[in-house]
Structures are given as C-alpha cells and as structure tokens.
Length: 570
Image (cartoon, rainbow, N blue to C red; front, side):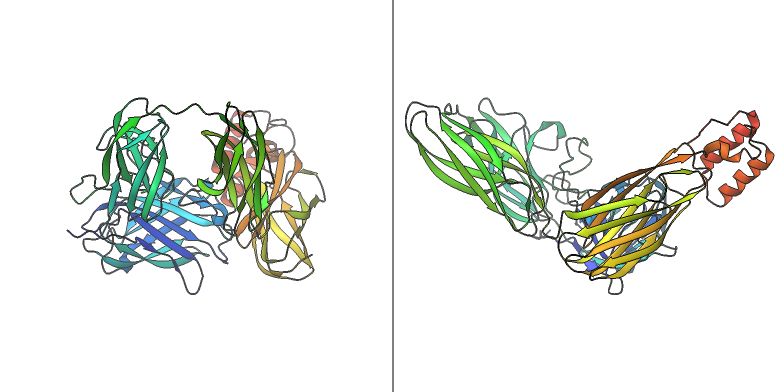
C-alpha cells in the first residue's frame, strides 16, 4: 500500500449559474470501501431560496464514475444538520440545528435525502451543514463528482456540484524525550494529511479516557514545535504518548474523549491500526520560583481588523537582585510581540506590546502577557474591517398593542458607518405570524435593491452599491392570526449583514397582542367553543394557519365545553 503525503478530500466548488459554494470533506479519505464521515457544507449566495424554510438536503453521489455508498445513513447516524448563520463559524459548527424527521436512501444507495422539521429560515450568506455517517467510500482512489441540493423537489431550491478526492491518508508524529516543569509538553513534528489534532495520553492505543492534553486544531500538512497544555500536569518522571487524531466531524473541536471515542478517532492504517503515534520519556523538573509578577493594565480593544491592538502591562521584579527578562504578547495562541526589560530588585516598569491585525483577523481572542514564569491574560476583540458599528438605527411600529388577527406596520432605518458594497437588513418576528410583507424600501444616498424575501417570521432586503452616508429604510406589514395562541407579545429583532456576514444587531421591539388563543374560536363570545368555532379551527389548520397541536387543544376545549374566555393555549 502506498501512502500519499497529502490527501485532499474535497474541492470547493461553485455552481456557475448560482454561485452557491459547496464542499464535502470525507474523513478518512481512504478508498477500498473505507467507512467514513462526510461533512457537507453549502453556502447560500443570492437566491430566491433566502427566506424559505430549510425542508430537506439531498446529497447525490451517483454523478461520479464511482459513487460512495450512503445506504447505511439514517436519522440516528447523522451527526448534525443545521445552519451556520452568515457562514462565520469554523468547520461544521452551526448556530441553529434542525431536527431530522426522515432519511430516504435513493438511487440504489448512492444518494440520500434528509428531511427536517422545517423550523429554520434560510438567509442569504448562510451555510447549510450536514454531517453524514457512516458513508462507504468508493473501492478505487480518484476524484468523483457529487451534487448537493437544498429543498430538492420544491420551488425554490438551490443546487451545486463539487468533486471529492479519495486517496490514502497519512499521519506521523515525532515526540522526543524532554524535561518539563509539568504544565506543557512539546511535540517536535506532526504531519496530518487531513488536518486534526495531536493528543497526549497516558498510554498507547485508543483509550479516550487516557487523554490528558490536546493541541488546538491543526490544518492539513506539517506542524513543528506544537505545544500541548496538559489537563493533568506531570508531577514525576513518566512516559507519555502523542497521537495524531482526525477531525472527522469537521467542527474544529476535539470530541474524542467526550464522545467516548465515537468522533475524532486516531488516524488508522488499512488494517485499523494507529498510524501516527510516538512516545517520549518525560522528566519532571522543579521550576525556579518566579521573581517576576505580571499584570495587565489596559488594552485598546475592540479594534477594527487592519488596525493595531495594544496591550499595556506592568512587570515587577519581586526578587532581591537585578534581572533581565523577555516580555511576550501572545494572542490567539501565537506570539505577536516581545520586548526585553531590565529591572533592579523591587523595581517595576510598564510596557505596551502590539499586534498589527489584518483583514481576516476578526474575532474574540485571549491575549496573554508573559515574563519570567508569570503571566496575565484578558479577552480582546477584533471587529471586521467592513463594519461593526452603526451610526444610527431605529425601529418604529404603528401600534405597539394590537388585537390578535389585526396588523401593524414596522419601519426600521439603518445607516452603515462606512461605504459597503452590499448591505442586507434582516428583520425577524417571534413567534411566526400570519404573514410579513414588505411595503417599501427607501434608500437615502447611493445603492439599489438587489433582493427581497418575505416569510411568516422574517423579511430581508439586500442593497448593492451602498456608498458612505447612505440610509436604508424598510417598512413591512405584520399580520397576526386570530389563533396566535399564548404569545401575548411579539418580539421583533433585526440584524445587519455586510457582504453576507452578520455585523450588527439592531435591537428588539415588543408588541403586545390582546385576545387570541382558544378564545378566537368562541364565535358567540359566551366563553365556550361550539361546533361553528371548531369548524373554523379545522379550516384554519387546513390552511396552515394553526398547528395540529393547537387544533387538538381546540378539539379538547370543544369536547369538554371548557370556559375559554381567559384561557390562552400554546
């Protein structure tokens, strides 16, 4: 058997007509009918499907000359289905999950359709995520085409194709004998053909409970001098084992120990043996008592990506002799800056260390200043360079108290703080109502409406070519159902997306709702639901205006002749 040094499982592809990006990452990528987990991700570009519910995902391996076998995939084996809002989470991490209601194998086991409970609304820029398991990879190595469709067989739907490469994976670990004060160990070299982690354990083999430390996620390729912090510090001389692990559910989180070995297993060869493992003799040494004390005084967080992050700290020599120390700034696991200080006995000094951020560095980080064996940490934030603040935002409603079955109009005004190529305004109403319909979109400044979407719980408007000092005002009508149930309030929330990425929360507005619930079917207002009211409830259910559960409540109230004048039912 020949092992490839690098195995690329998926090629990111975009359907030429739609622009929807789709990626499928198999782990392992091995051919020879290896059992594998396939992480499927599709990013929703401009599309009519925005505003629709996520009803199903159809993955079709039959397009390739040698298709994978998904006949063993079932509702109980799918690791996750959901949506990464704005496509800003790593790997297959999702913001909201969907409930799988049915899994149907098709095309002689080379395609699978996953149907959901339809409780998630798709937004432009979202990433649809499905993690399939177990998938049987093809017999032979090669690159084969796969198709993915969201809301297959419905209108609207979106489809795209990608290619998946199957080739033998490879992993190796070099873990040299070393001395440590107990908190960390260093792995000299790790090679992970598919990316993943290196875990440090008390024993060899595949025992999830023996893991005592793990690296951050490591991308495909070679990594040197990987430091692993031990959950259980070393207190005496011992032997430790470093093992290469996959990220088979592609969520960039180490789930091996927590899942009891079900996820993120070690790299294995064709015979099922661990292939990337090495042991090291660890010698425990007593660290010298630190005479340096470090404390963080301030930061200029949050900063905008592309600007400089500054961290100011005080370093004090608590010893009785002069010392020279290197002071370092670590942000997000990487050293960003350092300086040298010389302090006499009892002296202290203040230093400012910096990190020149770049456009791709948006996120929350832990910043650590360290010197002489002591350290201090704080949380810092880097905001996206394409926005992150609003100069103004405002929402008003015509009526903040309405009767169930009535309507009101909500108007929201936003002003991006910088010129944006594309801005999307998304307004959500909870719980879902009879209908939301956009009445008008006004643009004060430069820009033009690109897309709009309406649904029972959300409206969205995307504007292209937005220039500086532009104001976007969206008005939409909210129509409630007479049977809105126990929801005596509607909550309106809003978000601003720049280029498909969520940047700003607009805030919330609450509307009081009077009446409704079971009393909506008390036709003659005598406190009792009678046959005419029951018939109206059945008609509303047939029209999808009320749920089956709510209809059952109506039937029970009708049968018991319960007084529903003050009763509200979910």
